[in-house]
Image (spheres, rainbow, N blue to C red):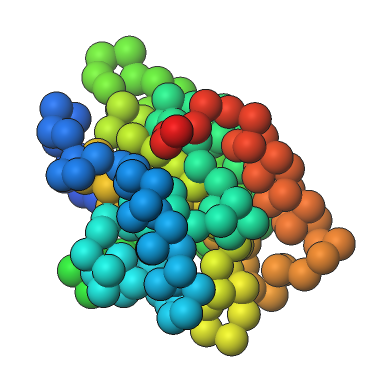
Length: 202
């Protein structure tokens, strides 16, 4: 039951975006607007979605404007490489937030394989933890982030849909977010990988 529920949640969150729709204003900002947005974040940082709404931009646009030490992005076409990197994390916390509801799935990121009959990427059928069916073609970009949270820095990977919104995020659990921890080492490896891949913005 739990496995089917988690799969349904992920299916819902990634299938609501339209693959043909171009995000309003794009995923990126012109340099002048990016500079102003970076200054606004510096003076009043906060939760990603809240700051994006406050500044009148999408979450993707805000992430594209942040300095590299906080946010490193890649084009959505590298989804499979990054997903494979996440499988090396000893532990992770997947977060899905929709309509004010927050779902958390603690556990390792499973392997998966493209469907032979649809556009879904089917996650491994494990007895517990994360499972479901993803649509990599609807992921327009992704960002590895190190952002201030509630009294701590939150380390994660944000998967961006075609509207510029975060479809879901994979995070280092708070109790493992310390230098020298195996999960943090794996996070840094994912970050180094993303830095080498194609950028979502110039």
